[in-house]
Image 1 (tube, helix red, strand yellow):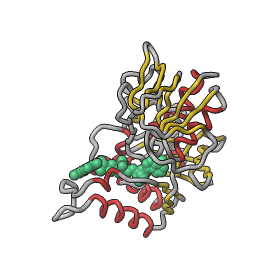
Image 2 (image 1 turned 120 degrees about the vertical axis):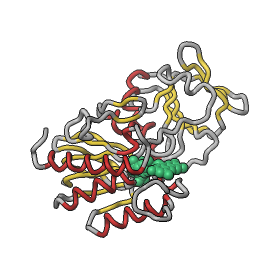
Image 3 (image 1 turned 90 degrees about the horizontal axis):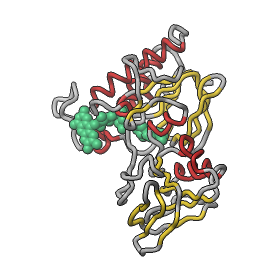
Image 4 (image 1 turned 135 degrees about the vertical axis):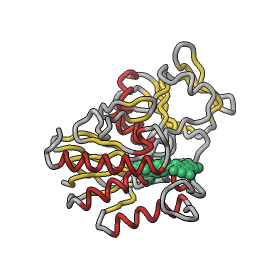
Length: 286
Ligand SMILES: Cc1cc2nc3c(=O)[nH]c(=O)nc-3n(C[C@H](O)[C@H](O)[C@H](O)COP(=O)(O)OP(=O)(O)OC[C@H]3O[C@@H](n4cnc5c(N)ncnc54)[C@H](O)[C@@H]3O)c2cc1C
């Protein structure tokens, strides 16, 4: 049993880990994929670097700083979180972990593919969360758009509910072997009336569907959060000023919460989330 798991090793997650480790709790940071920081060629507006610093240098230095004080940082993609009797169970590509408290610091990267009709049908057959919306597709035909582990995870959830589950890679290479019907054609359009009815591919072939689940890249902060009933608003996690979510023992910080998408705010919120998590672990807040 780990005291605290932090998902995300960007400025928010690493900042949180420093405070928690220095309070003598055991903390595990899990990360995978890119931080939005790595896409920043140069950060000129963050305190302390007279000539600025490249986003990727800042990201990697942050991880090393945490490791240097004894924080365990593991590169494992988180696929799924759930509440357990003692706190939270976190499933990654390699392991399952249990922790008393959890901080989501995954940034905010819901990937909406550039497909005609996708935005129009969000909430009308297009979903980003199998656990949240799968129930509505009992015995129906659904597709999952994606090509990696996250997509397979969502497809596995849906296969227990829907009649047919097909994976559409939208022209991307399959990165995971799976037993699902898989179509690699590029998608031209999602069509329907009041709700989604069919997918039209670039080669003009069509597929009749009732539901489309988007699961590109890896699961983002809001994806995890929704699965366990955390309130979200436009794909940002809703927190109070102590970075507490509506779920006991679960905190969120940085871009995952929306607002000002800057390093300084991520670092600040990481610190606040850590102090709240420490108080929670001490039993001082519920
Ligand atoms: C092009 C560009 C330029 C920018 N320029 C500036 C600038 O000049 N100044 C500034 O202040 N800010 C800038 N930013 C914004 C800044 O990068 C972000 O505000 C900051 O990185 C947010 O920190 P974060 O820790 O919340 O999220 P991120 O830095 O995005 O970190 C998210 C972490 O979560 C991990 N993660 C995500 N999903 C999973 C999963 N499923 N399993 C495991 N781990 C996961 C990622 O691997 C990563 O470690 C820029 C951003 C971009 C894209």
